[in-house]
Image (cartoon, rainbow over all chains, first blue to last red; front, side):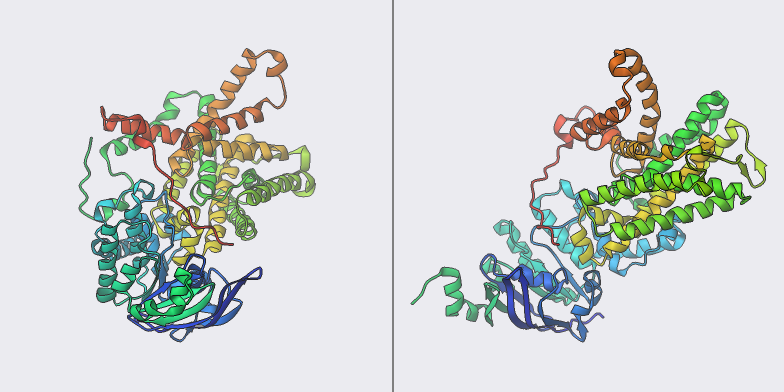
Length: 257
Length: 358
């Protein structure tokens, strides 16, 4: 499956012990677009991501990616459907090198067999090199060649963000879920992120869904924006439409009248 | 200081890139092979036993050091290996077939344990594996028809491909060959996808899952591989012990294996081997200590486990990477001389982690 599909979420809800973290949210993400989810802290943005990556089980609703019903898949098979993701607080393999991290990103395309791996048969070496070539393409794209052999625990925060994005790209996704790609980055690094997102969208044809607080970045790259608050959908539209929306302003600023 | 110029992806797959590493490894192998010429039988047997423990250490290291799954019951797998091999051989199964069957059996038991352990973390996993260790020791003791119970079980004479290995050097070479094979195999594992998925599960189950790693299956595999290797060590250990009793494979033995990998250095194959060396020297130090200490302390029954515990705590507090970490720093010191500083190995680890789910 190498063409982006439509992600359609219908009436999605999840409760945690009586707390409605996400309530009756429906939206579509069209192939090739950049879709941003915004909202105040605790609005349920990351929860939506965790529902799409099947880390949480929804209490109601459906999620389809093209023809594929994602709710039928266990979490480790979501990536096979073509959906990759990054995490808000960076979940890299700390005690491994950048190269090893990226190679784990290729895992969904690998055949693993402990027996042939123990003996390191010629076939294993051949496939290792094929995957290495793919990884090198991503290293070139993300310009992280200088970190290739560094351990993650030796890297700066900004570099880790890039590596995590690169690792998600190594899965060759058709849709990428980015959880706050610019959080913790300075202005310059945030600009870099916006360029990369453009590159990823145009060169690789990946649909991007992102949770982001930086409204400048959202305005620059997003085609459509969805605003949520308290788990409920407030508005969907172009960045300007959503910014003008009275409900959204009330949620953010708490002003009435 | 040596700079590596990489010209092919093979350079990153190769084990020994630097000349120094090649020389060191060649030297160690040469010394191992030449040892029978230099050592008396007693020391040769001790060295063979060290290698057997190195194999067991590599087994536990794969599970605890590389996959992050604690096991306080690994002596159970050692015992399964020892008993299964002895029983099979005493029923006339030839050595080579018996070894294969033993490894398979230990691996399958490991996978079964891994199946139930794959949903447990930290404390609960430690308790569960501890319970397994105690349980299996009891089984060895009570299943008298098969294991001879607390009366013990005599291990049949060592005979490989019909050739009896009676001399110390013959048995020693068997240990050397298998130890080298295990170290090679384990190293292979960690330059291939399976090993990488183990490490991924150790460092972040969450992102491993999102990258398509079947976390539960990886844990089952890790338990299986680890138990199989430990079972092999058990089979070889049986020939060293010549007489098996259930209490040999008790909690203290599990603790000893754990001590070995903690002191050796978590997360490296070399660490397991270094830990085995440490464990082999420990009894000598212990008997020395017993002479030095006043009898009221020195003759106490619990001195050995106490010392194990104290050493584990000291290593975890002062050198979490164990002897391997020391070795790395020493090497770095000489390679970068005179630029080494005390803070060269200080790493900052202040970043937030995603709140663990489930």
